[in-house]
Image 1: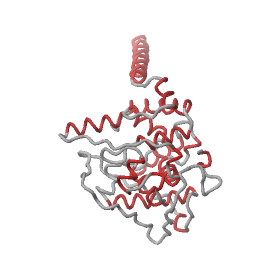
Image 2: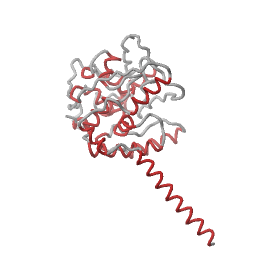
Image 3: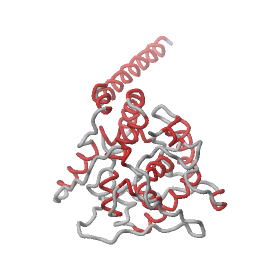
Image 4: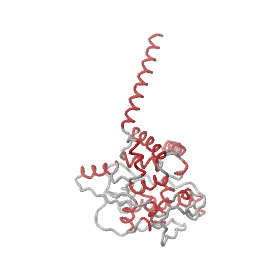
Length: 305
């Protein structure tokens, strides 16, 4: 009996030591709080994901490409803000960095389907990953990402978080931020994006190198239709009776193998595919750059400036 008690005590002590070491390991990979607070003033020109992609390109023997132009939130089409919120984080204004309901639903869906079918990361968590870490999946990274996301929510406004997010996330091979993406894929500024074009950019976010109009136009067209439907669910666009079913599933692309890259040669602007049998929203002729006005009075975007 005494031997058993000694074993329990030693096991408990070992567990405590391991927990402390794990905590130190996680803490050691966090950015300083001052760095996070500094995001209120500056948008970084280089991020963890950007550096990761540059290393991958060099390792493949190719010349790195970096297309990016920072723009203020007031110069970003409200269509893009609405599309991104609808597709990536419908509860953006209702959480403090982590959407626990979305995490629970994600786990339940993935267990039910026996595969990764739904993610639960908020826009704030995605921003933390893009700024300070890489796309390589690990539980340690997720833990650090969650801590940084909580700090961001305390130190930055929601408007600042979405502004940085739209300016730094990856939108294809060497394409970062919504301005560079709008000009590369639609030959327009992000202030002038139509509803269809904004949905097309938002559709790329989960896997911008694979759900890409230059790489997989069919997959991209389906993903775009999904975003348009989600925008109607959220009240940003006129609803249709065909939207009354369950939420459309996100296309799951195969992440195995090397990341595809785009050719540098000019290509025609991709034409968004309308929702079959539905009503395709009319493109905005002269979209207002202020993303503060929402077509639905109760929508979260009414909190944007």
